[in-house]
Picture 1 (cartoon, rainbow, N blue to C red):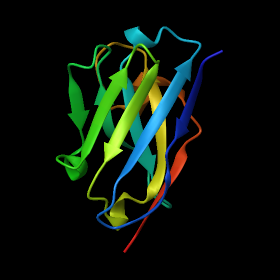
Picture 2 (tube, helix red, strand yellow; picture 1 turned 45 degrees about the vertical axis):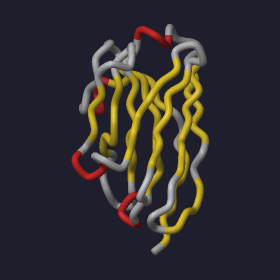
Picture 3 (cartoon, rainbow, N blue to C red; picture 1 turned 180 degrees about the vertical axis):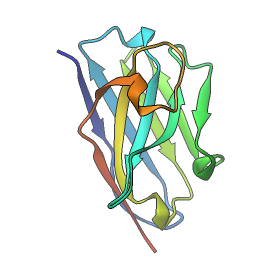
Picture 4 (cartoon, one colour; picture 1 turned 135 degrees about the vertical axis):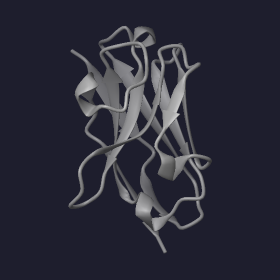
Length: 124
């Protein structure tokens, strides 16, 4: 049974930082691209960042470029999202997801396993 468990969310002031972690089990982690998504109230779920199976290739949505960094440690079956210079618009539930393929995708339908999410709230 595949499980993805996110941690690291919380409440932070604008300009602050958080580091999200996602621990995976039940899959051959090193063969899957991984992604971080977020969903704000009343909005659709959107991709934030994704990373290839080996970590060499990454993708970021424009609104987080230069502020967020995605990384992974295949020895720990974990993927991370370092979030700096946080803004109130970053407030959302953040989800970790495993892609069916090795290469990062922006498309929600390409991800077949999802965590339950962790809340990130950025106050102004």
